[in-house]
Amino acid sequence: MGAGKTTVGSILAHKLGMSFYDVDNELEKKCGVSVNLIFEIEKEKGFRERETHMFEELLQKPPSIIATGGGIIVTELNRELLKNTQAMIIYLKTEVKQQLYRLRKDKKRPLLQGENRKQKLTEMASIRNPVYQSLATKIVKTGHQSAYKMATIIIKHYL
Image 1 (cartoon, rainbow, N blue to C red):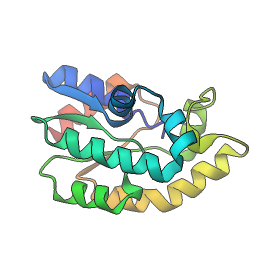
Image 2 (cartoon, rainbow, N blue to C red):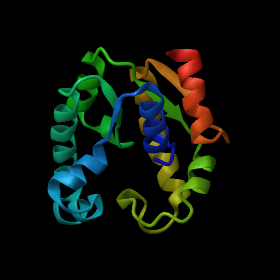
Image 3 (spheres, helix red, strand yellow):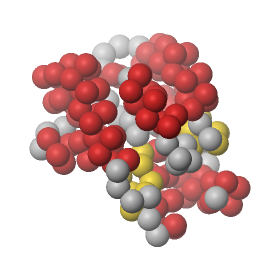
Image 4 (tube, one colour):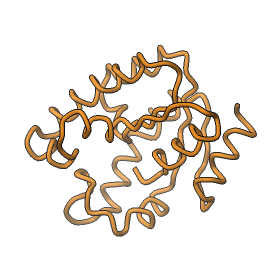
C-alpha cells in the first residue's frame, strides 16, 4: 500500500507499449462502485472474492502489466496464481515510514481507516512482506525515487 504500484505500472506499460490494468480500478469499473463501498457492504471477505475473480480475468489477457492491490497475497488462491504464472512479479518494497508519508492525505484505503496508521501498516508489513518476498521474481526498493525513476530502473536492470 502506497508503494506506487499503479503509477509505476502505468509508466512501465507506456514505456513498453503494453496494456496496463490495476486490479482495484478494474474491479470498480466492473462493479460500478468504489472499493470502499465493496468493503463496507461485503466486508473484506467479499472484496477478496471479487478481487480474485478479477485477477483471474486479467491473467487471461494478452501479456500486460497488472498492478495488484497490496493485499492480493492474503488469499491462498491468489498466491497460487502468482506462483504458477510465467510472468515476472516485481515487488515494490516500501518501508512503513515511506508509506505513512505517501498515504498521509489518503482517506480512501479501507484497511487504513481509524486510528494508528503506523501500527496497522507495521502489522500488515510483518505478515505480508515475507510472502511478497517469497513470490517476487525481482524486488525493487522504492526509497525516495520518483515513479518514473523506478520504472526506468526496472526496465534497465530487469527487462
